[in-house]
Length: 288
Ligand SMILES: Nc1ncnc2c1ncn2[C@@H]1O[C@H](COP(=O)(O)OP(=O)(O)OP(=O)(O)O)[C@@H](O)[C@H]1O
Ligand SMILES: [Mg+2]
Image 1: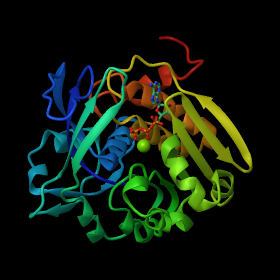
Image 2: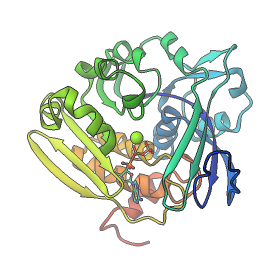
Image 3: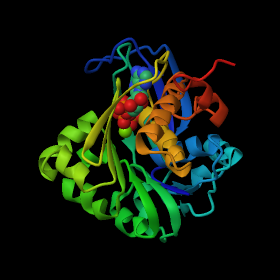
Image 4: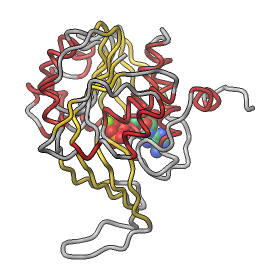
């Protein structure tokens, strides 16, 4: 199994409200954490018992980082990372306010160097936000492809983001990304018809389009501490389900459990559950 996407160092602040221009704002807390969409999904899958290979690009500052230790410690294969000497690892600063809105400032750092990655054959691969121009070639070596273009939908021309579509089996987007893409792809139903499955997430759940049907799933109730990484955690659970041979809606339901666990801790990776922890929170699971 492989996961492609960014690796980053996150700085996370909790504020009552966002500062206005030239205002300094006191945070309830500022924490650092491991992040990057590719690393988040890979770590999520490792916590669930897999040994995913991470396809990403990092700077020299990654070698001694706790982010690296955490990924390795949980069993992510870092053997194929592009290690860049002249750029730092990507970094992001995110502030979350009391209504759980987020603002993010980031430096993509080494991430564009994902273009130096060689394709690797795999049965199942997840492609998270990162250097998406490298994805058509990387995806061509993978039998079953899940693609979450995430924020790239807003930063890049739609043609660039959708260039890998022929290689994609399951496309995952949030509702805002879906809205942005819909006009360019002739509407979501048309897009779904070209795919094995289309998953549109929102804070309250997800719409799962498959074979002309649309299934609605509710989110799993959570005591939200920090929404960072909800989407990545959801994808980790979804890809786990596909690896287990489950139907897409069942895999998506598992994704919503993994997401619920992730958002109950500060940072994208700290709350990622083990397989047993996630199973225990599946709706209908017996309490142990
Ligand atoms: N407040 C919440 N409570 C419970 N579950 C949530 C909440 N927010 C998100 N989730 C779960 O996570 C999934 C993905 O959430 P969302 O649509 O917000 O992702 P996203 O916008 O891609 O997130 P990210 O910014 O992390 O990429 C949802 O389908 C839901 O299952
Ligand atoms: Mg997302």
